[in-house]
Image: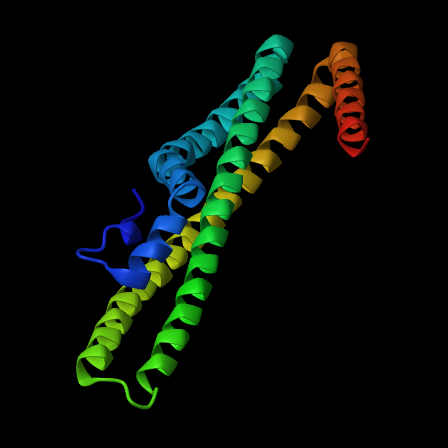
Length: 199
């Protein structure tokens, strides 16, 4: 559950805004939170494994081992990109929620200035503003955390992709004609997939 959704005794407008936020943002955030550190660790370990295998393969040109390692790298990078998309949705939904809260707070604030408003009604509105402010601060904190994690995670994925490209070049350059042919087929499949996405 999103940390900012755990607000004790939220009432009125805050409750309606929070209820609207559940669903997609909450699911994406929970998926991100439950897998972020695990996949990040796997990315780091996998880069180390690539470096070790490349060094070993440079000595013995183990074509099959390098191809399997390349496939595993691509598969992990694809998983990481899906996870990044989830986090970006959660971050975007959180920022939209902040904007919604700001607008609601401005609306309530203007209501407190209405002439003829009873003291009790004004106190209720101020209480509701205080609740919304607490939720907004929590949302800002959540958005900041997600943003930092996404930035770091994106860097990790880029580093893995660099290693994977180096692995592809190693297969092409050090595994003879088999490696060169494999690389040509891989690039043809990649171009084909790119064309299919455009069409």
